Length: 369
Ligand code: UDP
Image 1 (tube, rainbow, N blue to C red):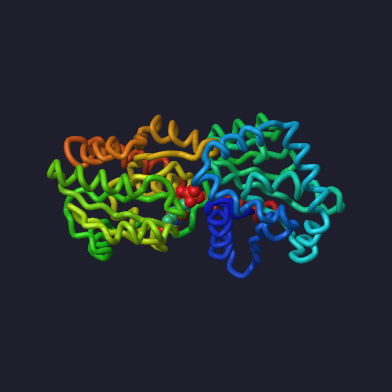
Image 2 (cartoon, protein in one colour; image 1 turned 135 degrees about the vertical axis):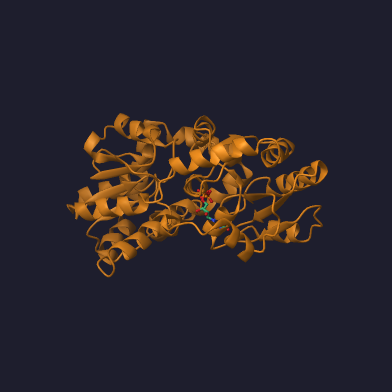
């Protein structure tokens, strides 16, 4: 994997936990950031550029995405990177001595498989795609033993890149095993989280990094609920964005609002809420579906998150709106006249969720061994 955003490490850790739960003591799962740990300077600095680019220069991210989709350019870059990095890369095999390799990143297929071929090492190699709908073609390599995907769109993309039907398995995203456990009862979990309001509980998140216009949305929603007299409470999870947390914790709100930093009990917050407002992160969407939570998408990262918007809207499990005032209007109507619609979206979401996917993936990987 590589730490570009939080999702790839989260998927790796989810698989690691599932191995530990399902096959205690039988497997040692080591998580390696290939680009940061096994490439020389300056290549090892590249993963760090991802978050600032996505947060502050989306135009540049769009450009890089387009370049990465170009087969000629990307295969030239791969050859160049391999030449620069091969001595460092060889150490992965020496230091970890794997019996099987799982890739959970679009940029850890081609180069590791090339390395294995050059070294004459024969190991099962598996890709677990951590994007939902829109998948960069670097995810797919015809030589993998299995490629696990979470949607028909991703399965089609894999087949278009030359993977055979038996290589492609559609099982869902590898979400943390805790989401596979029964959800706590709503009233109990609300009380334990200090949520006293009997009305609508809206959960607002911006991925692991607290990205996007979270503050503007929080202000707009609180103002609107107060102005329309809609009974409701807002929970804002700022993730690792400390500045955002401090700013929102200092605010004097017109309705009850809880503000938190990075939380370790996301299943509880989701179980307690009536809807979630989030950027179109695949992890959060998949978790919200498992929890039967209608999803109001407030934005998306161009490229990998683009297809998640029609996925949510067309499946009738939520809506998309990128203006804080528009988001506030939707939340207020979900808490008022559109309560029935909210309940229908919740039921559809629950049907779309794949709580067991991480175990299903691990079981198939073990079968390969
Ligand atoms: N998350 C969490 N605690 C927080 C904020 C986020 O556990 O305080 C988790 C969230 O449950 C999800 C992941 O971080 O599993 C965010 O993944 P997503 O794909 O939605 O967005 P990313 O941060 O990778 O862009």
